[in-house]
Length: 200
Image (cartoon, rainbow, N blue to C red):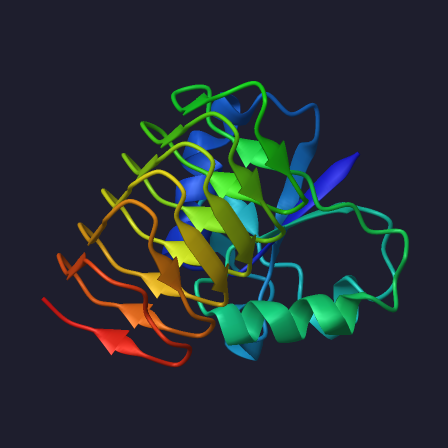
């Protein structure tokens, strides 16, 4: 099956370069992007085929969402729900380590060097950058973006649509409320209410 990447951006480029690590049988066909100036051009060695509306509302393909914004990704998934022929594979780098008993939804991306420990449950459309560590028996909701070198203690809970920026550290047993932002290198020592921001 052909695979199309949504987002001609840095994450999309990273996915292309790391694609052999994911062990998928799909063939990358190209990108779609809602910037009309990119249509017909090449990005990361592949053509930009057009916008989301032009391509993905009709096609039968696998789709990878190279979108960092939780809100944008959520809205895009809602839009694409009208096409029930789309597939959203999980992309797990062969350079990551994931316990066999972890449970995953769909459309998740885990890059090289990340570790997901035993008993962890991960929802849909989450992004984990390089060298992240997720402690045992954590619960990760939907549409979270976890940047590079983030560490979670065991029994952590991310409710959903949360951005955790590079180098942040979340202590064991912490619950982070929906739509929160944890800034770079911040340490979280107590539960965080929804729609909160935590700085270093």
